[in-house]
Length: 106
Image (cartoon, rainbow, N blue to C red):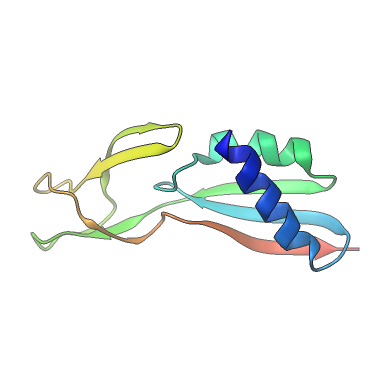
C-alpha cells in the first residue's frame, strides 16, 4: 500500500497551488513504485485529470558504461538492475524518482 501514501503526498503537495484541474507526474523506471501501480491509485484519489508517465533511467558504472541499465526484475517496491556491459550494480544518475512535473489549477 505504499502507493496510497505516495499518492496522498503528491496530491497534498499539488493542492498547495490551488484547486486542481490536472496533475502530471513522472515516475522513473527505477523508482520503488512502478508507474503502473501508482497511476490507478492516484486517479482514484484525485478529483482532477491525472497523467502519469514513466521516464527512462540513466546509470554510470565503474566499467565505464553510461546509459540505460539492464532491468533484471521489477516488482512492487523493488527493482533489480545491473550494468548491461559487465553485470555490476551501477550508480543511478537519473530515473529513480517520482516527480510532479506539472500542475494546472482553476
